[in-house]
Amino acid sequence: GRLAVVSGETFRLVDLGTGATVTWPVAERPHAVTLAPDATRVAFGGRDAVTLLDTATGALICRHQVRGLVRALRFGPLGGAVLVAADGHDFQWLPSSATGRTRSFRGHEEEVRAVEFTPDGKFLVSSGNDGAVRLWSAHCQAPDGVETVHGFSALGAVGGNGRWLLGRAESGVVTCVDRQTGERARTPGDAQREFLAWDEGTTRFLTRRRGTAVLEWWT
Image (cartoon, rainbow, N blue to C red; front, side, top):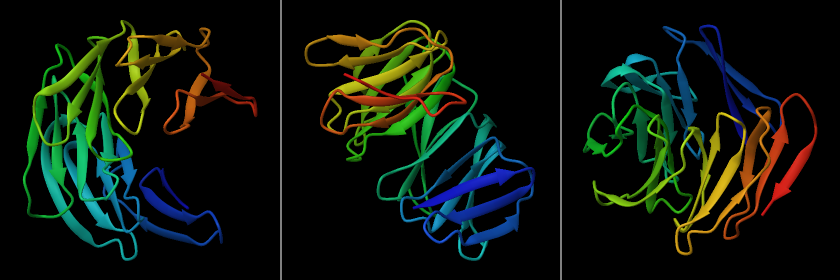
């Protein structure tokens, strides 16, 4: 695997297997960064723009104008699109090239704070300051379903088939919601707990206490 790291105005792409590092400067320190699944492209989000670069050369692929400061940025599973949440109650689907269709998804009552694709690419998930986690079809701009848990501050992860939603509240409580049954599983409140991984196809997820090596499976 590869890891994208931004320090100040320097970008580094680290090969976790060999330790080889590619480094180049960036024009301004980005607020959000996402790496394509094949690690051939990286996207930076800053004020009023999303910039995509070639990771091998640092060459500019394209730049998309957005409204306000980019809060969240995610490549799709195939790398063909980027989800962007900036200032506002909506989020955008941007092509990962200079051409392609741009789409906006509206439905939150307050600012969108996090966006994500499901691993199979069929659904999009967003969470906002309104405390709602919303599930969208990747082929439709109307919400496919809504689950609301008050106090959500950031999206954690989603199930591969769009059945399960997962988010983390300000209190540190991580909640998993089964959309078919409405059942919910919660971890104890801990502001230092962070989401690490989803056991795809099940309701299990892994968390870690920040600053420690303590890993916990929840179901």
